Length: 246
Image 1 (tube, helix red, strand yellow):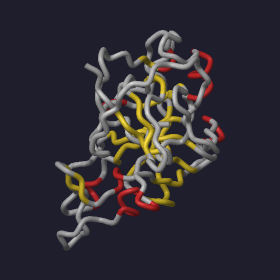
Image 2: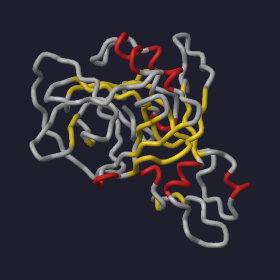
Image 3: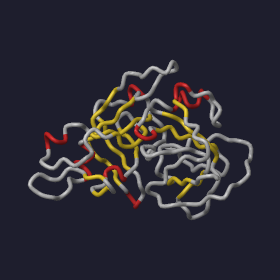
């Protein structure tokens, strides 16, 4: 049985639309926007530099778009800064994409003060959670967290989050953070799409599933509806940690 997924139109860096022959329309069941990641049928995620071109986009396409995708990770020094540091220290969080030399687009809920099953650090001397802005400053973004074509891990380069620029604007689950060191000059950046994907266009999601090394999945758009801010698909595998991927 197919598992169904949904993403926000504004919530990813670029839909990487590729024209394909018209495909049959599949029914899509939408679920709560939080925690919707799942495996759709057989799991067929592939490491970006070992991708064989069988998921619906070319190897060249993945090669051209994977470098700006990075992974948010909490710093591991929370206990040295906070009396009550919570339980996020060192945790690999979500995926995201560089959209300029120093701006990184990701999911908004990773900067929430309240997160189910998790506790962010508390303001010293209180039981109040630190602000979303301070949460962001306790994170970094890892690039090159992936294996090369011979399955050897590559050297990771990490860049500190300097500030939270945009967060849940208009009630949409996205955020933009500014990174130190202008990593876009090293890894490039992805342009924001000016138009939305169309029915049967191919979607490509480059992601860090389960906090692991960078992988790719792809599949067609199977549902669009006027007035609905979601795009539906039913063949793209996603897992916790995928949120924010471009």
